[in-house]
Image (cartoon, rainbow over the protein chains, first blue to last red):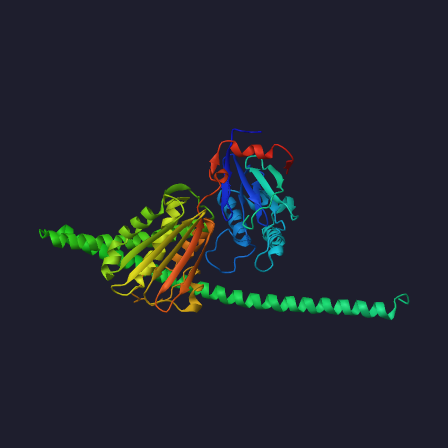
Length: 161
Length: 297
């Protein structure tokens, strides 16, 4: 394991892009994280969103998929990327078996669908996706190699991840 | 075709009819959702344009008075100490207001870009509230409003672990709203309860109150109850949406309760965060989780 790099723990609703080598780590349940990597400039960023769409409730933050993915792409472009060099890796969107309001079982699927939708709108290829299922995931994205390590989590995880 | 019985055909037709009905219902639902969303977007756009004019109102005007007041002090050789004190406290209160409004704008911008950091520390919550009351002293004095703090706890101390700077913004927004909407000589009651892993807060004022159908709307960004330029209650319309966002980040919830006289704001946050996730940066500590059963993409 490479121990020379720093690890950044990404909380739900946060979004980061690192030009320097960094391990970005997060834990996902029904949430989805999109990792975007620039194959040419070899750097990347990641988001972690809880809900698919911002429906004008409260602040327009990356807690919502449509905002999170567009903002992440914009951040990559601001850092010098061209859209054609970007690839995406999508994780999460599990069915979290907890009772909640509305279509709680559908949130994982909807979170994944919005990723497909926004990425295809920007013509960004999805290189890898590991989504759905009943288990949570722990992922670690290496921003200098574009590699993502993933491990399933068996214990119950909260709705907020 | 002859192989299909009438019964099977009927069943299939029924199935397809049902599917078509379901799809129509879904379409109808989606259409309504879209219309509602559109209306909300229009409202949001309207709030946003109000925000821009509010910013002018709330930045340009105080800056003009700051300039005028400081120029007067600079150019006139005033020896009356009381007068100097009066002028400098006016300057302070104007500058304080600008700083407070800008803080909300900065926080909103940070949250909207996703570039915020959660910085956990351990501190006394009562001391934090007292420091805010001290900061807003000029606002309290102006209306002769007083504040009472009531503390309930199941520990010896009132120390909590959370992001102090962010919690301070929440308290500051709610307390300043309470004072602004209070009547002269009113009282504000701040109840703090620290039980197990939760901090619960109630901030109750006895002011002009809020209509029950607005208790959710106030959390929308740029929303202000009174949007008129001459409103004596200042604000960007960002304070409560910023506060709600902070509360959610700190693992809690916030709501308004309207009373016959005045408003009660209730919020709670989790105060005993798992330290494993607290360090935003660690050199290597977290990686051992990937030693076994790991997949690489």
